[in-house]
Image 1 (cartoon, rainbow, N blue to C red):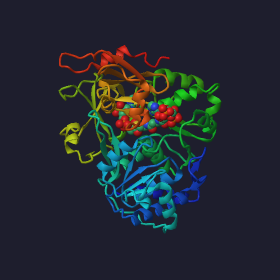
Image 2: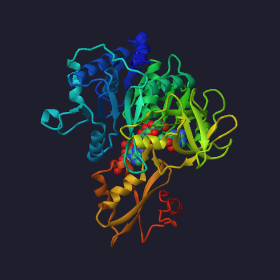
Image 3: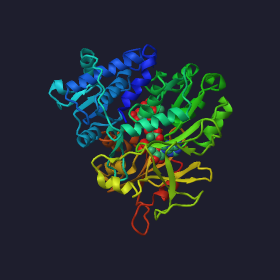
Image 4: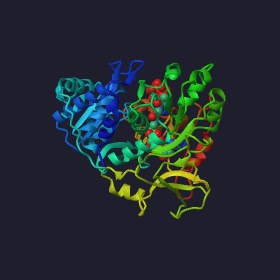
Length: 497
Ligand code: MCA
Ligand code: AMP
């Protein structure tokens, strides 16, 4: 159909002189950009990237702090037909090296890099501020590279059960269909103001939040990160907030937080991790708002959503988005009857075409009829409402960030003195789940500080276990497989204090 950016640009057109990104609490150098300024900045970034050799289909890896300029950079990549590869700012050099090696990008944009191309480092690497200086000196090249539905717009890395991250290839068609659907079903309207406190290196903050607001040419109050006090202070200026469940539990922990804080808000959206019925209920009791919970994943963007109008049921994730099909399958792959729990499979225009340079992993995840096996356990009731019932995949979600145990276990097993390890998630009041490591020593247990120091070298800190337990041996079943459910039960109180 078209380059996603062309669609967004069309929506900006009538509002070019209106505020688009309004930066609050020190997010970037500039205070406020209009839609027109954002458009111009993206055109300059597009020119600077072209100047660095970026051609349609080339990957541009970006690991940069959240800022107004970083948003323009994202749009600039789309504009010149590049493939945007966002990386979590918490990733260590070892993790970044893997992604750069895998994505084989033309350009790597980093925040505050010690040595970029100007200092004789990797010739592809450029500091984000330097690129911005280049962009400001470049002409605001209005060209928008033509793209087809199937052309890649982004590669988003998602960890795998094997411990090796996979790049989910996301097309312009995927992003356009999802953005238009969400804009419609969440009822975006003139005058909406989005309060944006999510990171912009994941689907939630980058695609879901920004695209819906851009399609509406809405004002976005742009925060560098989530801070409950700051967000509370800005709620009276906003109509929509999107967040992970931790946002809502932290708002509830603010003394006196309640309906007076939310008078202008029309929609609170939650996703990326389960919203507990307790938080849903308390939020409604305190504010009068029923949080709208939706469900998605990197490979498919948003998949289901509770309704804007109609019943939002706590503990459910609502109905499939328009044109999205869902079904529940048993272990043999056969479809299960209504209300039975099995693996959720999905198909639709939002579904990615596969994993970057991993055709065998793609084949494993796709059924012959084009359905994708999500790895999430779910049931669907007679009305089509989906309820998640846990995860088939060995995944921990802490504060909305995914942590794959195998990756953490691999790093722990490298530490001198560790014979083997098992990593699990335990209930965590603030983050939903916290990471726990159960270890077997070669001879004597290794100190927590030694473990942390060793992990620091190669593992982003949000993936670090904050609780370590030493045992004589790990519980195993007859096949020799570690019984993670036994460990989850045994250490379920790990974060109770
Ligand atoms: C920070 N830390 C964490 C997390 N965040 N540890 C575990 N899990 C986390 N999520 C650690 C840091 O490493 C640091 O540890 C310490 O906490 C303080 O860091 P700070 O940055 O101040 O953390 P925070 O302000 O408390 O952040 C918590 C947060 C944040 C606000 C919940 O993690 C967040 O914004 N999460 C949103 C994630 C998200 O956007 N997920 C969407 C992906 P130390 O001091 O030891 O270094 S999923 C997705 O896109 C799918 C498609 C979907 O459905 O949406
Ligand atoms: P990611 O790989 O980061 O895209 O994370 C996707 C995973 O997050 C999904 O497969 C689910 O397990 C989980 N997830 C997303 N939204 C929800 C939700 N509303 N409730 C429970 N889990 C969710």
